[in-house]
Image (tube, rainbow, N blue to C red):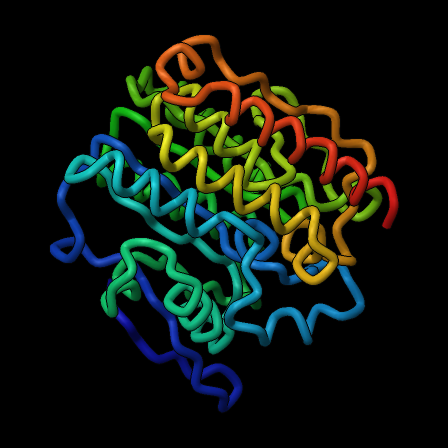
Length: 286
């Protein structure tokens, strides 16, 4: 990435733009993630958004473990990028959040894995993300492209545009779109073609079913969400006050293949069942 400065109405904004030559190896497996309301508890549509946005350790529980497990499993063939439409200096908060929460690649050079710098005067969130997704796709041409966003702003629109773009060019890349079910009345409905998730646990089940994470990663994420969702002190890390999820019914089933290869399938089944019970209760009772 290249860091540049923009001067807009006298305010200097930091922007990070993709630059070929840095971080430019072609990835077979590419994970592209939004930040706010996807992995970070921000509350874009809540009255307390400012307080949430300023935090640098307010992670949705288990997401850094899941991304780290994916990153470890894919090894040299994998690359992760964080695509945010947050404008200007707000980007520095996103960088601090990624570093302090332990998201991969987990080094000081994480700035090289963030695409940002939207000018809100000239481009909306959806257009900015769609344009950059297409540029990343054309640069990488991966075998698998995993998109992770939320239903609060324009991720669904942008991810749909990329999928149409790849399909229209008869691309061989397999594109998967996972959308965090954060809002109901204030958010977009999650259409067919996009896979909803409500916690890192059910997203981890999807990843395990695809073979993207190993048993140890799945077990760690399930254990994290099981504990946090059942503890009064930590439950808002799973279901913050602004999150609306009473209607969520899309819990995936653990595949028979995953369970057949697991060293302790019964423990995994029990942990996932407890997660579903805990989180369903949190979603209904808030």
